[in-house]
Amino acid sequence: MFFVDVIELEGLGNRSYLAGGPAAAVAVDPPRDIDQVLAAAARRGVRISHVVETHIHNDYVTGGLELARITGAVYLVPAGAHVSFARTPVHDGDAVDIDSTADLDLAAIATPGHTPHHTAYVLREAGRPVAVFTGGSLLIGTVGRPDLVEPRLTEELARAQYASAHRLAEALPDETAVLPTHGFGSFCSSAQADGDSTTIGKEKTANAALTVDVDTFVADLLAGLEDVPAYYAHMGPANAGGPDPVDMTPPAVADPQEIATRLAAGEWVVDLRSRIAFAEGHVAGSFNFELDGKLATYLAWMIPWGKPVTLLAESAEQLAAAQRELVRVGIDRPASAATGGPAQWLREGERPASFARATFAELAGQDMDEVVVLDVRRDSERAEGWIAGSVHIPIHQVHRRIGEVPDGTVWVHCAGGMRAGIAASVLDAAGRRVVAVDEGFDAAGKAGLTVLTG
Image (cartoon, rainbow, N blue to C red; front, top):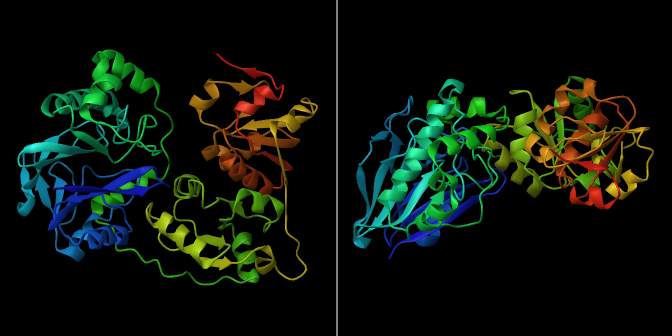
């Protein structure tokens, strides 16, 4: 018997896997914080014999090199990937034994498209395919982005994605489980995954890569591509160079004077509390990236790379969870940190800053000629409907384009509230009067606001 354990990386919208038999297992696309992979293996009572990468990742720093070093596992990396560390190069058609007691092996299938060297791995039991780890090639209802390597290769890689999807569909039985790394919120996916699980057979009927002609597929895929998170530019080189082990020991403690000094120096002070708590009271000049949101994605996307960051958390547990999220995207050591709340973070005599939260109904009650409505959703979201007269600046651009926001009180909204909270904190730090609309966008039309489409 074989097993497959899923390791969810919800903040990044990815999955890693541990798969094997009674004695040994393979780790697929492991995260930087490898302790959870080791814990999964310990729960199963298995040895990690192999660690494999489907590709050099663009959206997170891998833990593969360190995991292989600690466990003594064979580290398999696609042969076409240019890396500067020792590994076992994998070629199309290569196969390795994972657990001979369960007659389990792993076979490599070249699946270029997400990257030129991308490789999928088929888990076989007694020679029968039972699962395929597809990384960023065939996802649930979609495929991985083809535009993350080199702009001039994008169309070529999009066509390769189509061919790779067909190769997998033709080579594997319909009942084979498809286990992708991307597609659960990661911007490495060309679209959000349609569901939580799938098989080759299901994808044959639901995935555009397998249901339309290649020219239609490529045209639609390229038309749907949106901005690439800025931090992606740093992930590939970090992974190709061989990431360092992580250090998640607590950062140095910042007192109120140090927090003020760091803010005055232009450093980023990030408050991890909920957007509700932040709006009610916070350190003036700090930014709100709530831990329960997509902290790693949006902070890494927006912060100037390498700028020192100080974390403000309610508790040591919240701080530790944030560090775990951030090391996954290469933000390794906060410059400092503090726990508690504004009372512990402000100097004597200082008062917390605050701003209002509201609903779309409250926005509808305003004189629309007297307020600024700022939409911070993605282009594709806005294309489906927007409030008449609103200004559009996607969330990841707000901090660089504050000067484009018209004068007046800014009512900022997104699709649900989290990104509006981030944008409101950035505007508030810049001295703008702001109201965060904390409600789902479907409520806008129902509140009587004019929502345009087309």
